[in-house]
Amino acid sequence: MSFYVTTPIYYVNAQPHLGHAYTTIAADVMARHMRQRGEDVFFLTGTDEHGEPVAQAAEREGVTPRELADRNAARFEALMPQLEVSNDFFIRTSDPRHGERVQQVMQRVHDNGHVYLGTYEGWYCPRCADFKTENEIAEGNTCPIHHIPLDREQEENWFFRLSAFQERLEALYEERPDFVVPDFRRNEAVAFVEQGLEDVSLSRPKLKWGMRLPWDPGQRMYVWFDALLNYYTALSFAREGEDLTERYWPATLHVMAKDILKFHAVIWPALLIAAGLELPRRMTIHGFLLMGEKKMSKSLGNVLDPFEVIDRFGADALRFYLFREVSFGQDGSISTAGFEARYETELANDYGNLASRVLAMVERYRAGVVPAGVPVDAVLAEDFEGALPRFRELLDRAELSQALEEAWKLVRRLNRYVEETRPWELAKDEADPERLDEVLYNLIEGLRVTTLMLVPFLPRTSERLLAALGEESLELSELGSRPGGQAVERVPQLFPKIETET
Ligand SMILES: [Zn+2]
Image (tube, rainbow, N blue to C red):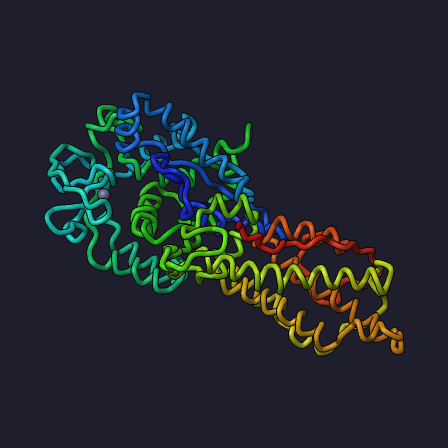
């Protein structure tokens, strides 16, 4: 099965920040997990480069829009390896191959009769590059996002007949209740549709930096149309000499933050229907990370800077924290103190120490070879039973935090198993060597199975640990599916203690 996952493309006017990292890592978790399941994965991210804000910023800096886009797109592209993100392609909407494909699709929308020429008058936010509808205007005709005065603008535009898709979209949400997840975001999408759809402006004559309409080159395309189509166009040129559209379209999963739900849940499916293209299978919407807490951490100060976290603790620690601290889908507070607490108690103690202890015991008591021909311990099997299927089901629904908790329950269970069995006491006089074999085998197996589940959250750490456990495959497997007998190695502390600067 193909699994095509996307992030939104990021607007080059901004600097990469935690929000971009969050969405991108979420998509990466899904991509890595599905690769482990043997799915044919394609993972796309990239940059959105057209529109008035880019042209304005370029003008202020005395460079061309293309120069500004080139420079800022490079920052986003460099972000991917820093986050341990495994995207298969990075699309830039200023790529002429994207432009060519967008024009083909939009020409089809035109030829199918879904556009018309009309006059637009409305309140426009230059920073959003967007006209505001009545209920989106804040007090005193200001932008609710940017808090700047809106401009009253009138111009001749091409319009996309969004209103004609009202019933189609209502039917879509009726027939496919999981088109948008989680449920409460789906309800928001349905509410957008049910309040009545207005036609939307598709082009603007005043734009200087954007794609021309193929049937009216005096008008340039409103940036959202060009941007949304990236999910479709990228497949036609992501691999040199190959068109991947047949193989991966429609997209399996679009990942995004809640602020762009409307574009994706309303305009995007309508546009695809208008062009005669298949709709994506699902979109998952996450909330915002809020820097609520004022308590300062020992070493990170007050503001959780993703780049500082990565420099000091590695990308895995950031990846783990973001999905552990805030339930994916909801808004939630994060903080530097919260990061350090989770790093110390969960990554360093619960997981890192467990791995070090277990591997050290196998080395000390069994010369670094996992006992073979030993049964799975029934008390452990009981708690591992069903964990992997549940984990997979949760990720099928893009419930990342719940999936991570499912894996973490096993980490905690293994720690309890160490305390219950006390292998160091069993080793004292070797009174019961078979029992020690059994305990060590089960601990290694538990650690192996759990670490395989954690691969998408902790890609770098799990790679190291799986190598130390003598596991070469990334395939998910059940407790007891490996017979033992492999050589293992000690690992240095996977998550070293935090050094406090004095
Ligand atoms: Zn605005």
